[in-house]
Image (tube, rainbow, N blue to C red):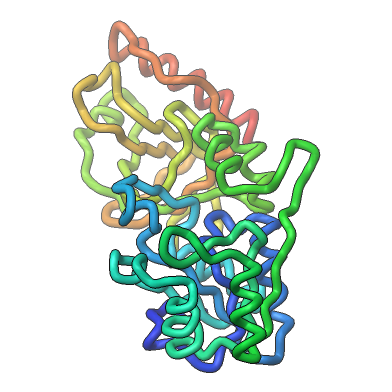
Length: 303
């Protein structure tokens, strides 16, 4: 596992890629590849936590990849450490020159810096690639600026991935990510109504900072986090209009043709395709009959 650390814990000097890199799509990987091929310092990805918009604008910023997930994804790319810079109002007040000198040079001893051409930094986002390149030349630091990558639908971006995921389109989501989207959650006690109607579910508590697909019923693969084998499953995301319309949004997984002791376990889930939207049924029996149809459709998708 690569190091996941704060700036004062980082191994130095660094060749660093600077950015949010949420989703680690092809554009991000291109920027990161520049520093993993560098011999000027330890290959490092530097991101802010929490997201600047959360601090400055009070926005809730859900992530495609949580830091621990991102660390796992970065390791095969050749990155040796993921450094999370604590973002606060004090950091936000630094000019581009102050941020460059205090954080990138003094704290991280950057010898090579790689960014995307749309990267901005410093107070009021006043710093841009041309300013960073100028600062780099003055300090004998190599600066690489990666071009934006496009496909036939436009530029590669985290926003496109988010839109596809919120729409429940896992096919587009996975194409843009270049891998299968997944999330993890801890199994917590539920009301047991699923078991009563013949469809026991694992109720998952998912990190509230993780971006999940839009509400609906999905065909999915799931497994215990510490095991290797995924099994076919159906997953319900969102409200429970038939069982308890006033209950908060839930994440429920039912393994198909497989019984596992999941008490206090953690599951990893890979949604594959949304089968249908959520619907209020007139009775629990009607709901059970629909889940039977959902399960049949899910198995045809997954096998």
